[in-house]
Length: 246
Length: 246
DNA sequence: GCGGTTCAATACTCATACAATTAAGCTAGA
DNA sequence: TCTAGCTTAATTGTATGAGTATTGAACCGC
Image 1: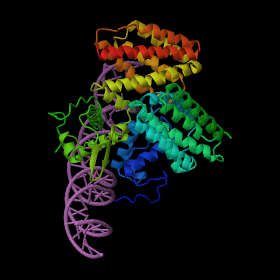
Image 2: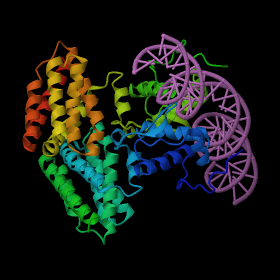
Image 3: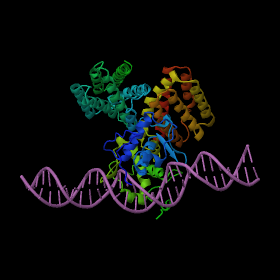
């Protein structure tokens, strides 16, 4: 019998876009796990039962599980079944995992952890960028600054520019491992910015801080770049904290 | 026809242990990609052709590709096929990816990047650990120190203890995002230690540095912890550099 | 009690058929 | 000649059923 997928899918919201089915299922399950609807140690229903419940084939379901397994969220073994792994084994910095985590409002502790990471990584990256940046990097950062000024952080375009600004700095650090962190950092930047705007507008204009950072990197001054970036993240953290507990 | 997997598998070394087939294929392909045998932009052979060449079913092959895709190594689309993505999109900090990268001797640039990451993250983590460490953390670190002293870094047990030491510090920092980096850091620690020993023994005894770091964390002195860890990583980097270009 | 054996539950693998997607080539019309 | 739209074919995506391998747990002999 061919499945009529899409009707009365009760158990999961299936906000699936144009993805492939295995991708949608992986996302839905991932969001459910990150959101706490399946706790570490929980055993998922068997392949046949669960795939029928989701109205997908076992093939698609299994490929979804492979994706989650590759990111450390679940672990499958014959006889035992598929169970959610301990949180310490999740690849929290995986871009998809971060996106899924922000689907359901993440815990305050998680936000704090991400900011602590930013506070550690971004100043160091800024210092490296001040030493290694190319002309193209500078041009990109300048353009991002203009865009931020034109649109403001309340708009989608403005946030994209902000993200591009921070991302370019990580690129300019010329370090593949740091680059791999860019998506994680980007997630923190974007979402915390959104959080801030939930509570009546921006508490403070972040543009001057960004300009100072830009100047330091253009000048090739690592110490200044580190200091300004530290200040920038500190202010962002303060604003976000204020937004979280008003 | 049932496949006779395991005989004359020419194209890939198939150093597959007790893994499931999809896992072995994912690993073999992952190692091949990380090792440069498939370059970014390259299109893999079609599912049917390639799975036959590997003597596995299309199902198992596809699940392997899902794993690689989840880690950002490849991207599949109908009609176009499956191609290796740009290196900037790889999740370089994924534990599996790191393990695969170290299968074929990694580039000097990659080692440098990892050490730069250690230099950024570990001192900060040590400072946090000095503030937040529990009695259990201290006990674990002490035990790891003893083990390192007993076995020395030339043995497997000694290296495991070294790794446990660094890992406990990251745990003691009480930050999930930093914890997620532990496997990456651990990979850097282990492999660079092995590299060092390739060239006639250890250039210098790292134990005193570790003890100083331990003392700082026990004393709850963040600044001292940061400083000693910085020194420790700096020395490790110098030794590794010497080992790489003797 | 204890060590080995059997059993059954579950994921894993295979094979095949068919559907959906999409790049490229083709055709019709201006 | 150029372009918009259609057609086609190549490739991945999905579904289904049959059979295999693994492994925890119950069982049995000692």
